[in-house]
View 1 (cartoon, rainbow, N blue to C red):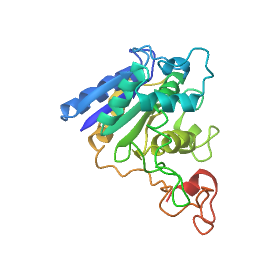
View 2: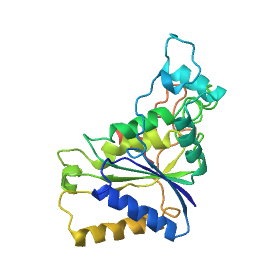
View 3: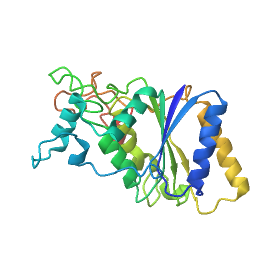
View 4: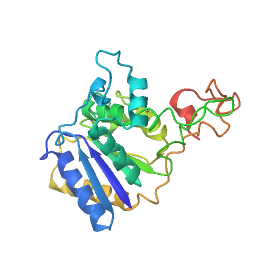
Length: 258
C-alpha cells in the first residue's frame, strides 16, 4: 500500500514529531511505501495567491478559482502544488497529522489544502445537471482512496464529549472529514485522537503508540465513516438538500450520516 503522511507541526521533538516517526516506521515495517510532506520542514507556502499560477498576464485580476482552473488545465501550476497532487494520486491512503489549534488544523495545513486542491483536481469535477451535481461527496478524483486524521488535543477527552464545553470532537472534525476529505472522494476512516497532550509520561506514550499502531495495521480493513453520497438519491438536485423522508428527525451534521 502507498501511504502519504501530510504532517503539520513546527517542532520535531514534540509529541507529534515522535508519533510521526513512529507512524513512518510502523508502516514501513509492514511493507508499505511511505511518502511524507512535512510542511514546516518544507517551508510550505500557505497563502493561495497569484504566484501559484505561472505565466499569468501582468496586472491581471486574480480570480482564485478561475486562475486555479486554468493553471491546472494548462500545466501552469507552481511546482510545489503539482508535486503534492502527484503524491495524492500515488497514494492509496492519506494521513493528515496535526495538533488541534483553535478548534481546527494549523494554518499551514489549511494552506496546503487550499493550494493543492485545485479547480479541476479536487473540485469542479464532473457534470452538473438535474441528475447529478458534479463528482463530489463520495465521488471525484480521489475516490477509492482512504484517509485518516491523526490529531492531538491539549484538553481532556471529556471536554470534547457529547456534553463537553468544547463540543463533540466528531462535530469539530466534520468540516475536515466531510468537507475536505469526503468531498473529493476519499473513504474517511474514524480519526485517531490523543487528548491531554501536556501530561504524557513514557508509559502513556507507549500505550498511545500501541493504540496508534493497531489503527495503522488496520488501515485497509477499518470501516469508513458512513457519509451519505451526494448523487445516490438521498439529496434533491440541484438544491442539495435531503429529501424530506431521509433522516426526517435530524438536522445539522448528523443528518448526513447513514
